[in-house]
Image (cartoon, rainbow, N blue to C red; front, side, top):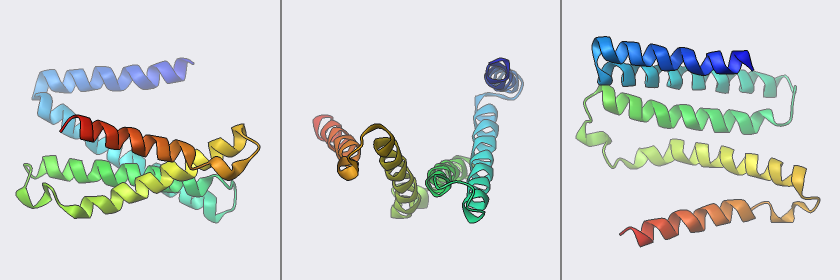
Length: 141
């Protein structure tokens, strides 16, 4: 428990100190960059575990963390480059988004299988999330 609390408090203090010294943008970009690189590192670790056949859950973790890293990396580069027009609304962002969504669907299936004996309904949470997201989009237009 101490490690978890320290693992939260250290970045909070560091980000506030960097922000006070160098400004919000610097703290945001440094923090986002660290998070992006760590997500790639974690994805590579899970890829290695999957290749070693250490755990059947590793491939889902690869997709999840790689998707997170790619999405974060996109927005990190977008911010670093000063929000270039060519990145705004670019459909290439759908590729990392699909990787991330695929990882989420794999995780949902594994969780469903652990909780419910009948595995046929594992798409229910994915479908519900899609309906809620689409409904919110429609409602806020």
